[in-house]
Image (cartoon, rainbow, N blue to C red; front, side, top):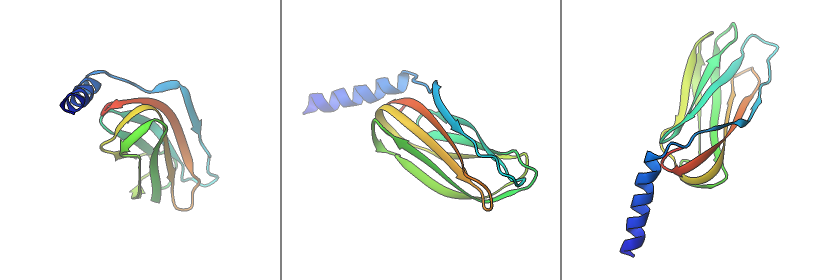
Amino acid sequence: MKKIILYFIVFLLIGNLIPIGFSTQNSQIERIKNSQTVQLEIEVITGGIGVSALIRNIGDEDATDINWSIELSGGIILIGKDKRGVLPKISANDSENIEIPFVLGLGKTTIAVTVEPYGGNEVKKIVKAMWLGLKI
């Protein structure tokens, strides 16, 4: 039993030292342009110990009551599989960061980020990643 615990701790430590990144070749971006002037864009999805995404308001008006979600699927995700929230406001030409601060998992994972402002259309970005312990 002690050997199993030791191997697990070594695996987690080595997992933090090996950089594993996103596969941009397999990314799928779905943008739905709004006929109104509130338009959001998911600029960047990054990893590390958690997952974060940068949401930019590329429209002419402030975006309000923005529902957002980050969902991980595939692989083995023990902690941090999804998170949802509401951003009160993103001013025109401004951005906000959303995140799952801590994720523990293993294997190939799909990360889906979705944002939808009040009175606007949903924007979704999907990327594939590889989790190794605490690192993406």
